[in-house]
Image 1 (tube, rainbow, N blue to C red):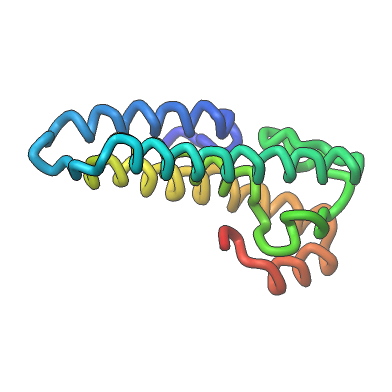
Image 2 (image 1 turned 90 degrees about the horizontal axis):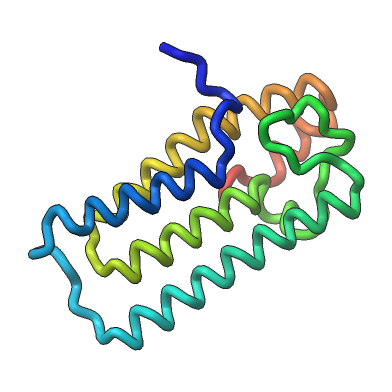
Length: 155
């Protein structure tokens, strides 16, 4: 198997999964939930904005700590960030993308589209988060391991 760890930028994974959700929703239109258009749009927009805000908050917190937000090079991290959204999730930026993807699935109105969200979480966990955690544990040792025990990976 080709080593995919840190090879595909997470936003590309998110957009690919959004496309997958659209394809899945179109495959079995009979499963569509016929929610009022305004309700689906309002709920999806709210979730998408919360996801975007969480991503931006995470980026801002990294910037204030003067550490890299580059997910393709976790070994360049200069600090274990534990403030801002990192107090309640170790991966607020990935959680933000997941919320945006959930918003898209809700807007599509087909439960089958949620399989794309499952794919996103599984892929990001396996090929992005777990390798990041190994690199951070190697770079920072006990402080990172204590943080890992205290704060959940996703929520």
